[in-house]
Image (cartoon, rainbow, N blue to C red; front, side, top):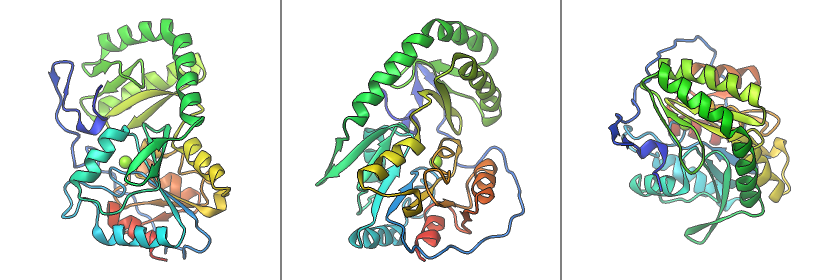
Amino acid sequence: MLLGRKSRTRVGGKFFPNPPQARLRVVHIHMHHSKPEPLGRIRLVSTDFDGTIHEESAPEAVPSALQRRLAELQQGGVVWAINTGRDLGSLLEAMARAQMFVLPDYVVAVEREIYRREGEGFVPVEPWNQRCREEHATVYRRAAPGLRVLHKQLQGRFDAHFYEDDWSPLAVVARSNLQMDEIQLVLEDFCRTEGGLSAVRNDIYTRLSHHGYSKGTALSEIARLHDLKPADILAAGDHFNDLPMLDRQHAARLVSPSNAIAEVKAHVQKQGGFIAQGRSGLGILEALSG
Ligand SMILES: [Mg+2]
C-alpha cells in the first residue's frame, strides 16, 4: 500500500522532492485581523493536520500549548476530529513523530473515511466507510473510459507524475504549484463534464473523489452521530482541500492560520471567520483560547 501523500518522496521509480515548506506563491493580502470569538457553545472541533496544527519545520511540530488546550476541551466534553488528506497510517506515523500526547476523538482520513478512537486505536465508522467505498467504486467504474483518455492527454502535456492508488484511479504530483494550477483546471473541467466527481487538491497533490464525500460531508456525519448542528462546530484549515469543510453549511465557526493560502483566507473571511495572527498550531490555539 502506498504511503500518505506527505511522506511520498519516491513514486513509480521517480524521485520527487518533499513538498516545499515555503510556499511557492507568496501572496500578500491586506486584511484586518479579527478577534477570536469566545468558544461558547462549540462542541465539535475539526482541524486539518498539515499546515493547520502540524508544521514540520516549527520548533514544536504540534505546539504543546495547543495540545494542552485540546485535552482541556476534550475533558470539557468537546469532540475533536483531525480532518486530513493523509491516510490513517500516515497520520498516525506523523503524530507519533511529533510526539503528540493528545489523541483526537475522530480521524477523517483521505478527506473521506471516518475513524473513531477506541482506547489508543482507531476503528472505522460504519456504515459510512463501507458506503463511501462502494460509491467511489461505482463512480470510478463509470468514469474509467474517460479517465483513460484524460490520463494520456495529461501525460502528453505535463511532466508531472500521474498514477493510480487505492483512493483514486488518477492522482497527480505536480512539479510546482504553478503546474498544479494548470493541471487542476483540466481536472476540474473533466469532473464537470463527467459528473459525480471532484478533483481534490492539496498543494502540489490532487486526487479524484466522489463529489458527495469531502472533509465537509465527513464532518457533518460526525456531527450527526453526536446530534450536533453547524452552530456547535468549529472548523480550521489552510489549503484547497479544506474549502469544503470551511463552509457555514458544515461549521458556524471558521478559522485559518496565518500561513493559509490566500484563497482559503478569503473564503473564511467572506463568511465572517477568523484569520489568526499565528502560524499553524499557534494560530489555531488563538481561536481555541476564547
Ligand atoms: Mg493542510
